[in-house]
Image (cartoon, rainbow, N blue to C red):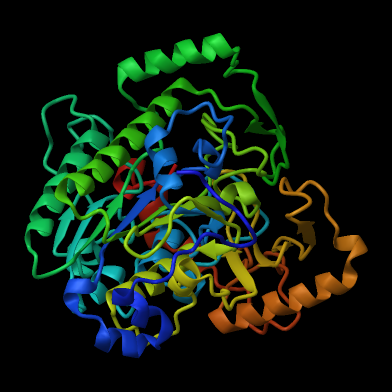
Length: 539
């Protein structure tokens, strides 16, 4: 199928009568009018640490081979301005589950993280809530109340205690979802409390795909209820482990193309107070990462093939998305996000711009490219509208995308926001950002300095226009500061009672003296001495 583009969206088919009320009436009317037999099955598929430029459908020149996802893109509405709500994993996963900016729940960094060890930063980050609060309704809870079968497979990373895990948050079945941000190993034994070990050497992506296929078979057999499957890949997060035959394949490919995995690096800004330059990968070509990408794509293809085999693909609504940008600036820096700047852990586009593709053949025409900015917060209201489910009582920041997807209706939103008051493990700076139209403003919490970029003209964020656009800067700062107040944003903290006072917005009246979290014996016991494998370190 040829892909089409014209304005924000083109080629949208008229809504089928079965689903028309979902789009033209209010959500309450939709909820009361949508018969169970007309509602779609729903699948959310999340890839971990996947950069937008890792997929062929977003980057024809990618080193990686992703034929199944590229085929899916041709069947879908492919958003070119799709975003994660945060440049690291746990907060974005909160936004997917709640439809809310993670700042509202004080979930602004990956769960299980303490301050970056061994760094002499001038300030401390604010204490986060490192679990998904119980008073937040999740996708699983809302869809289960609406009569859906619910199942979770893969990475959860939304709380250390089992009481926060998927089976307690609305999912009938939980396979492999626990506190960990990455697997102990991609090969069995897995040491995963929600996944029995397979035969020694079994590959985790293949195992989880078989588990999801078995769930699809079981749930599809129950014709009385639609189903919701949340399949969250651990791929392509570290550790770098892949099938040997695929590593061999991509080692040969890299050699043929002249890739130099020791020298294909440039420089990014250095925000850590230490000597040395911040390296950033400038060319894709890591054989192990490429092998992991192929494993992700193969698993995805098997899930899609099973939907076809079961005869349910036509009335299944699927969102494929990543949780943050590709890892490009620390450790092995296995991928490059160019022309997007930086990567995971940064507020630049490389850290937050994601693959975002929606398919629902019964109601949405595929083969369409849409350049409207959308975000992970939009998953819940979109899914709930399709399911005829009532929205949670709390304010939902995301928007129902179905009117736009089915009827080309404009999306009634002019700004998107990010808040990341942390020294990222990957070298990123504490700050926040707002995008309005083609313009993006970043405010840095170390000193209050702002950067302004026109993303249409400067996708790589190389030309800071703040000095030549003072009125625009002032207007965007005002919007951002008003949002801080609305969502209860926190900022950097004084480092001990004698530490210097960190920057704050002029209209912020909170005190920057909360240091007990980082100086108490409990903190050091939990974060400073516990081994990384006990904490689920994200990196």
